[in-house]
Structure formats: C-alpha cells, structure tokens
Image 1 (cartoon, rainbow, N blue to C red):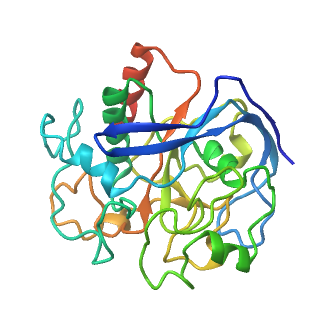
Image 2 (tube, rainbow, N blue to C red):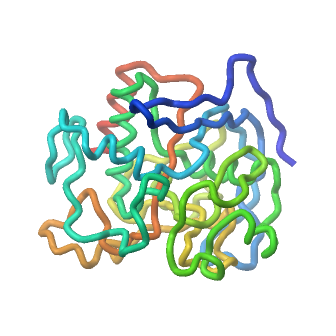
Length: 294
C-alpha cells in the first residue's frame, strides 16, 4: 500500500472561473506508491514495479467540461489564430468533433490537441494567478490508484465507476455520472482518455526519476494519454495503462499544415488539470509554458 502525508493548509477547493462556472480541485496527498504493474494485459511496458515518491498537489475532480472550456474558447479578449502564441484562443472547429455525442455544459471537452490543453492551462493561470498544467504520468497514476495497487478493477466495480465499450452505448457521457474513486476523483478510468504532460517513452517505468518526475517535450508524437475511453474494452481501463498518441488521431484534418488545436479522429481524448502545492516563480511559470507551447 501507498503511504501519505498532508499539510494543515492543504484543502480541497472550488476554483471559480466565471459568474456561474467553477470546478473542484481535490487534494492529493504527498506519498510513496508502486508505479507500474505486472499486468499480463499490457500492450506496452508496465514494468518494473518501482516505488515513487510525489509531492502533494491538487487535481480536478473530473475531466474539463465544455462549460469550463467555452469560457476560454469564447473569451473575446484573446486573439484567435492557427498559431499558438501568447494566450491565444483555439480556432473554430471545422466539423462537429463531438460526432453527435453531445456538447452541453456537463459533457467532457474532447478532440483537442495536447498543446490546446496547455493553452487552456495558461489561460487559467492568467485568470486565477494559480499555476495550472497537465498532470505528469506519475501524478495521474498515483491519483488513479488512490492507495490501491490492484492491477485493474473487477468488471462489476468498473461498471459502477467508468464508461467503456460494454456500457457506454458508443458515446461519452456527462462527467460525475459514475462513482468516484477513494480520493473523490470521477472518471479516472473510462469516459475519455486523458492527456498527461509527458512525452511517451517506451521504457518510462525503467527510466522514470523519483520526486515529481516530468519528461522534457520532444516531437509532437507520441505524447502520453491515460485512463482508456468509452471506445475501449474493460481490459484497457487500468491505472498503469499507457496510451501513446499517434498521427492517425488527426489523419482527416483537411488543413495544411494540420491544426495545432484539434484532432479530427480524437473524439476519445480529453483532460483534467493539476495545480502543484508549491507554486513556481512567475519567471519559471512563463518559461514552463513557453517550453510546452513552442
């Protein structure tokens, strides 16, 4: 089992970003846990099991919704461009990237590139003063396991906690319809796969460093998503399952060059955000965003 520590001022809070729009940031305590698994179901390397120690952080309790995303997407004070520079709004979607599955406020935002999610994080920083980013793979897996190192939940448990191929009716669903995990996080497995900040490294579990590991961005592909989606069989919904992004996620994009914002074939991917307890300096934050948005 994992071991955890907490601080007195470290509390779950609601982050308000509009007159009637807010999202909950859940406390994830500092601690040690076993990263990886010995799953025989793995398509990619999930070994060896190693003990990793992480600092405390906040993680949004559910995937970013259209209600939240649209405050950024419709922020008329921001320029809208095919390039990513400063704080820029995403370009309009050229087709219905929800494929008729629904786009009301409680549906999870989907089909965006990893860079688009990072621009949303930068916009949150300018709105709130708090440093938001995507979770690292280690943070995501730690939060998903929530103190339980089981390889995968049983099928009956999974049916109550996530949407996958057998129970999703071929579409993503509103957030928070299923039961949360032990730490109060919804849809960590299923509904949408979720971007992490990390470059996909095949031998990640062998080379990962202790104490808040994060990989340096490299080529656009592959980056790592986690959690599995409404399209995946139950066997793919595991906390240690690593999903490398692929150019086919955007193969039908008619633009030349292809969009840096949207994925024409990535209707299964979304994201949630992290806020580290120890906030970097303003200079460090700007340098960080520049690195991941270049």
